[in-house]
Image 1 (cartoon, rainbow, N blue to C red):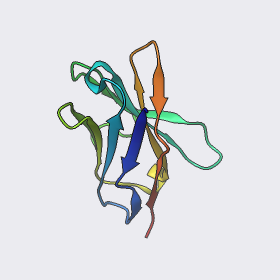
Image 2 (cartoon, rainbow, N blue to C red):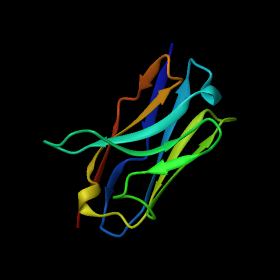
Image 3 (tube, helix red, strand yellow):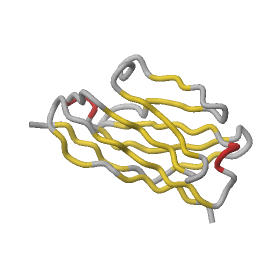
Length: 115
């Protein structure tokens, strides 16, 4: 059974940090490019960060320099380190994995940035 389970979300003050984790099971994690998406209320879902099977990363302009995506293939986990958080980062964050044949979504974790 394929699962992507996110954790680490919560409420944080502006300027704070959070680290999201996405634990994968049921597929060969190392062969999948992994991404983080987010969706704020009444907004389109957007790609936040992506990491390929070889560790190449790319980011949305809005998070460059603040967020870092990484993966640990031994733990079948992808991470999103979020620093200098802003209220506009408030959203449900979901992880996504694809080998360009099939893809999987996690259920999402809420991140709220507010004072």
